Image (cartoon, rainbow, N blue to C red):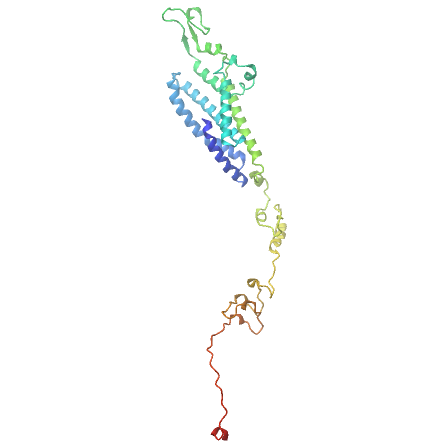
Length: 348
């Protein structure tokens, strides 16, 4: 069932990689939160399955046996989920992670002792993968929980003879009966220790989680600045680090420990070289105002003077650039004719 969570985890992994690069949180926080979020869903799956399957299989109808069954199943599912997350981190490709997870679960089922009896497992697999198989410990806890306290009869009803396959530990008067402990001893499961087996399962779970943290730390080491680095450097000044340096390719020093260095770093940003416009340049907005020409940058071109912004103001023409040419109608100049001889004007 944990295999179904691979696509969702791979999608979350992209979000984690981006937020980890931004320094929002660390790997440990992500792994712990992922574990806490998965607990309610696994608990619901465990209770719903146990409530239907336990009584349908005709197991012992006691509350103690049922709670033990559900607890072991819950811990087993938690380990399976941790294993799936570990494989997804190691192989961040959906198809490959799905194939490896299915192969791993199949390997654990083969060597757990159910399909092949424990005494028939080859020595190599018995002393290697069988020892670290979490399904082996869960399976043995479940059969011990069910077999303990049971008594079976092996008397043939038709003949009245005993047909016991499992050697009985009872006396001769009740030789046609054997107990659940006899079954565990016959199949070599008499050495089951509840406390020890549960501790081993918890250790396996912790190994998968620690491996997940280790792989994520390696994979996200070069994606950005970790969050731990922000926490450790308490005296780091963030503001100068965010301001771009005037020198292209050079960075402003990030570690500034006192106010004097901060003050020395500010003038370097304000004294960036800027080319001042000369009277011959065409960049009109950069022309600086002189004491006598305060409104020079506001010169607007008139229809008849297209190059008016380039006219330099003189001390006597403070508002000369604002003068606009008026359209004065042109009138012909009258020609004065010479006075005629004998007129009154000549006598004056």
